[in-house]
Length: 131
Image (cartoon, rainbow, N blue to C red; front, side, top):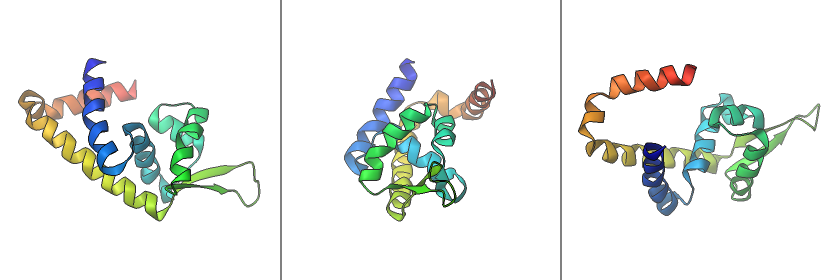
């Protein structure tokens, strides 16, 4: 928990100051960008980021208000809707990914053991994700 908190603090600061979003918002944008057609239901986003669908709905409202995400209703059934990245949202997701990459590269530069054992760490995290 302490390691995740440290990573979260380290990434939140530049994301907030450079792009005006939090790590939680970045995770939603990143999950949506990775989805087919940059569209996903609230349930699919919830699975991708580890939140409930209602928490995803609350979390994307500010991003919708900023024009980064839009809700697209199913033409046949208005009860069904997906979240979709707007062109501005795609740009923000790409820019924010660069901030995250640069921040983590800097963090890893100060953690030589982690850098040396990165492949092992990724294998362990992958195994944990499959549990």
